[in-house]
Structure formats: structure tokens, C-alpha cells
Image (cartoon, rainbow over all chains, first blue to last red; front, top):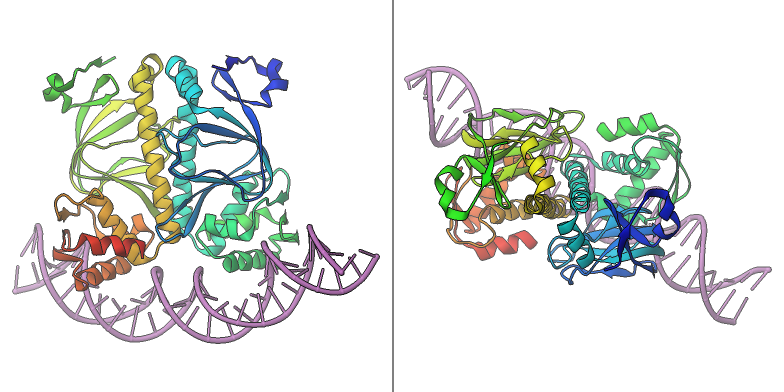
Length: 221
Length: 221
DNA sequence: CGGGCGATTGATTGCCTTCAAACGTGGTGG
DNA sequence: CCACCACGTTTGAAGGCAATCAATCGCCCG
């Protein structure tokens, strides 16, 4: 097994190619995926777990007749593909070109059964995802179109505005399938926010938060 | 600490008042709650974890302006209130009169850090909830009213129809807030299913699956 | 028998989707 | 280097589905 002790910044250089969980850093393989390339598919054997180095990844589920629901976007630093079962429960694709580290799940599973801090980190990650999905269920079940888009922007901005600039790695179609809307409705919401001076859109993928307070109000409307 | 070794059916009688996680059975206190009574509220300190003995419990989140999203229903045997943080992330209420067992979270946390099987059971539970929320996100984001109600009935029926009879512990309002719909729309869907001979409704809380295949078709429409 | 609450049904409204067209931009080949 | 094409985005118009508003029904309990 390729695990090794990990001690803070001392391992910073090699950490680039590893995934840290609790006390353990798992050395992995660096991979590059191109725009819209599939990383793994639902029901495939779940052999690997991934961390994003650069770019963005979307995870999603499909309904029987092909409708797509995006469940999350994963950016630099985020882990995904951590399933408990032996098959992936969802599909992952590269939003744009991206670099990932992949680590064998068997290594992580083994470590988790031997090392409590790894087990705890696993639980923490799963629990964080659960919290995110619960919040998202509230958005999908009980919010209008404008509120959903505002919530999305604020979520991407890290909820507390440090920089007011925001680069969207994903298309309007991705945003729509994440928010349970259509491309057109998402686009109209952006346009409306621009008219309200809540944001400005120098380009379709670049958002400037002109008035974050207004966005917060739009979210809870 | 009130944990004790648990060895299968030998402990069946006392298991009534305990919660089993992995190798360990946590002895708890039996509680009774009346219809609509709050069991715990969002942001309250998360002191206890619960198991349902009888009746049903709903867990939910509220938006800033008070709209309610029910995240799950918990029936006999189900656990709820297992949070990682020190506060509950959601609110739990009794759907109808119900009996619960409650166990101190501190006991479970301690056991989890000492016993890998408990830690694993915790992860398994959290992961199952995550899977459920993902599926629910697909329903909320991408399905029409009829499909949502059909999916709800099939989910309650355990997805594979053993008995065709179904007793709904919850009101139309609860179903509506679970599915992101209104009471009226849920009611209309039930009526429509009855007209289609997919179900019959001897009373508003009692559903007979007359044609499960039709329901499956309605779900994916 | 009367009161109250949950459920059903009907009529209308409104929001989001659908359908359709135009716009802009980035990339490619002439 | 420019023209053109493709694709993502925006905008407009019309339609549909679920929400809202409103009234009645039915049942449980007092």
C-alpha cells in the first residue's frame, strides 16, 4: 500500500499528488481530463476516489428517461467519488479541462479500518456532503427561479463575499441542471440581476457581485 | 457509559430500549411524543440520537421566510438525529403519537473512536442518508407533480411491492412539503391515480396499490 | 347535533417551460 | 487576416402546469 505518514507542511511538495485523510496521506496518480469527459459512470465498480487539483467536476444522476440532475460541483481541493458501496452511485464528468489525483479506494478502506482518524475524516466528508444535499433539497423543493440562482451565486462565492469577482467554470446548461431549471430561465435570472444592479456580467462566465446584500435578499425572497 | 456487548437475538428483549451500532448496543431511555410535538429543533445542542419504536417522525429544514422542506420520514426501526456537529442541523417532529428510544450522543461518539465497527456503522448510516437525499434531489429537481407522488408511494411501499396495502402516517400537507408541492396538487394526484385505477383510496390515509406497474410508469413518465 | 380540521374539487392566476429566433464569440479553414 | 461556422447565450412570444384562491365535503370528537 502506498500510504505514508503525513506531517503538515513538510510534505507540501508531494502533497500535490496525494489525498490526505486524517493522519494519512495517500499517494495517488495524477490524471488530466478534457472538457465533458466522463471520469466515472453510475454503476461502474468504484475503484478510485479523486481530488481536484485544478478545473471543475460535476457529479450527477439521471432519471429513467434521461433527465439530468447535477448534484454538485467540485473545485480545486474537493474530494469526490468516495462511495461506500462497490459501485459508483453517480456519474462524474469534467466541466472543463481539469487535473485530478486518483487513489485506490481499497487503500482508503483498509486505512479506515485500521486508523480511527481516517475513519473519522471519511465520516466528516460524507456528513458534509449530506448537509449540502439537505440544503439543496430546500432550494429545489421550496424556492423560485430567482432565489435558486441567487443561492447558487452566493454558494459559489463561498457565502461570505471576500472577492466580488466570480469565474463560472460551468455553462448555463450545467447551472440549470443543478438548480432544476431550464437554460433560458437561468439566463433570464442573470439578466434580471444585472438590471437590478445586483451583479454585472462582463462576459457570460464572469460575474461581478455589485451588490451582495441585494443578492441575499433575492435568495430569501 | 451504558454500552454493553450485543450478541444477536440473545439480547432481543432488552434491545427494545437500545440502539445497536455495529457490535455495540447502547442502552437508552424510552420516550413518548404526541402528534406534532417537537423532538428537537435546528441549532439546538445535539445531545441525543433517536430510534423509532413505533409511529413516524419527520425531519425538516426551514427557509429564512418560513417555508418548510421535509427531508425525510422515519418509521419503526429508523435512526435519526445523528449529527456530526454539536448542534442539530434540522428539526424533528412527531408525525403522529410515537415511541422513541434516545441515547446520548457522547456515548456513541466515544464508542466510535474506540470501536471500528461502531465507526463503520455510523458511516454506513450517514452514507445511506446521503444516497436517499441524492435520489430525492432528482425527484425535486426534475420530476413533475404526478411523478413525485408516484415515487413517494413506491418509496413507502419499500419499492418492491410485498403488501399492496399502505397506511400513510402523514397528512397531505406533510407529503406536499416533502415533495415540494402544495396540498391541493398532492390531493389531485391521488385522485387522478384512483381514476386511472392505479390505486384505490378506501380512506385518505389508506392506499391500496391496485396496479403497481402503472405506478412505476407514472413515476418515470 | 354541531364544530373544526383535513381533504377534495373547481376556477383562475402566474411562473416557468417550451418553442423560436437572433446575438456574440471563439475557433477553424480558406 | 478575414470570413465563416458552431455553439453557447440571450431575448421574445406563447403555452402549460402547478400555485393560489375559494368553496364544499367528510370525518372525527366534543
